[in-house]
Length: 172
Image (cartoon, rainbow, N blue to C red):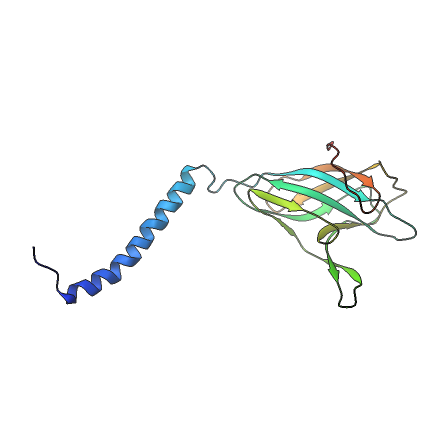
């Protein structure tokens, strides 16, 4: 069998590498699709919800949610609503200045990654709220979480003293 000349080997190699790369990518996508996860919608749930009891004359406090997403696509928390607050709740991020003081920076949305989730915390993403009435430790505050792709979720967050959280089972 004759060996291809050098004139034929270079073009074959130039074409062969991209064809091989495409074939490998197609096999990977086929495996992902066969697993049943390709393109599956987000499936977000709330695993925990709590809100800090307001202290002193501070007009605002923070609510925190632990969101899980066992779906194959990410979703975004785009809005939080509550009939138990004096003003609409706002998504925010805790920031520190170079002088050591803290402030809240508004954010438009918070990503809830696929096959993972989002855990809100005092030094990260949270929800700034202005209480309506007196909130006492052990009480509950109703919230509705709105997502870019999923259905709204209604949840009751338990009121806790600042610096604590709860793993109490959620009630709708």
